[in-house]
Length: 222
Image 1: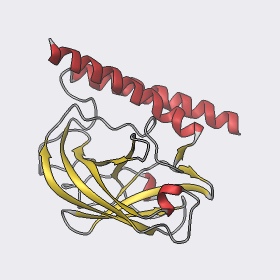
Image 2: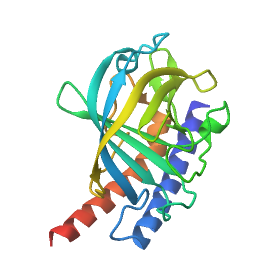
Image 3: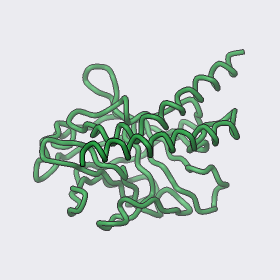
């Protein structure tokens, strides 16, 4: 069963990479996915997971200034329904950073795994879609807008109840920045690891996006 899951994830990942390549070819001067977005600074306040998950980042408390990108997956004009993305870059003690990527979904036991569309990033819940591995088992993360500038973050097992653990308060707008790219495969947070099957699913698409990003940077440097 484990081998079948790996093969299925690899095949799905290859398919996703192919789709990203097609979009990248059609948009040589923009990101293949989430081409439109605004980068803002924000304050992330973690109160700690209760009950504990065994994940150092989820269970810990603290306050960090983070970078957030609000984006539209397809890049349709404002006001039209689109899949919205919320990307958060969290600084780490070692000088690096961890990235979280969430997209508009539902929050029920089924719809938390299904992408949905909305007119704004605060009109729908957002989740990580795929689970992270923690010492106590798989965990999904979710965000629910309490206002246009405040989001409540929560965690849950794939079929369990949601437990709030942090608040995200947006502050100043830094403006559009197509060169800021978030990568949840390479940049993980303490105690939130990618399952191998998740990595196999995500890595080909993100690898293709990285190549597209390098090409755009080289073109701008000329």
